Length: 273
Image 1 (cartoon, rainbow, N blue to C red):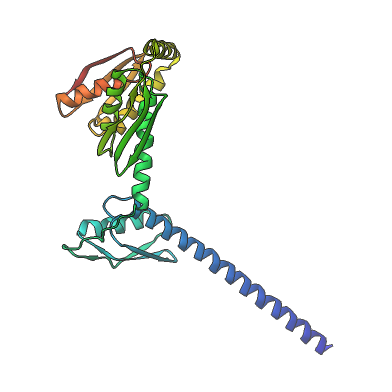
Image 2 (image 1 turned 180 degrees about the vertical axis):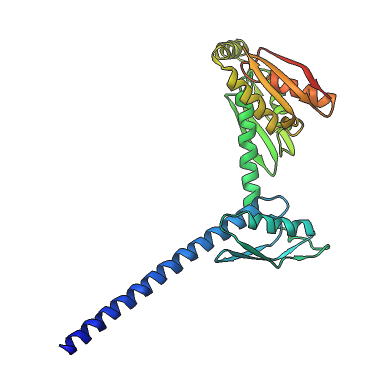
């Protein structure tokens, strides 16, 4: 009887031991996944930051503690790297071992980084959106961006639309230059058809849609501070209120609003500088 009990206890002990090992292994695997996720999140944010992407920074995370290493050229960039890491969910502390060297120059590279690719995708999407919202017809236009240099190709129905495309692209945040290779489609009646279509569409455009697109147009613009401008729309009439820094910014804000599809007129009496 004692031998049977001993064997039973032995088997139970073995089962419990294996269970404990399994639980510990699962816990370790879960922690490793969490560490990897946090490392990736921090590194991705560095890659997207225009201030940090060119620096060769390394990140190691273990149980909520992030260890940062590498070189930067300014103290402010070292502090930025730390704040980004602390902003990641689950990071409790940061050991910032990044070295600041005022004469440090990141290694030149001919390949485009992850952040550069994301920038160009964002710029392309922003320019495309602004063209779609426009009162002009850009159905036949294509947009490409590389290093902030935007190329417009395809067809438009008028010289006026081509000029407007250049202005919209040029004033988009992040755009360095614009190569407008759009061809003006000389088909008879093309301009009238586009205008009629735009007028028909504008009748169905709701005021809330117009307000949203005007605000978005300001947000994407590199020359207008949209956060200081209040936008309201009533029956297609857009009212702009607030402060701008100059007469040029005020004029551009009015133009951007006027070019949104469905806008009948713009009241900017209370938009001052």
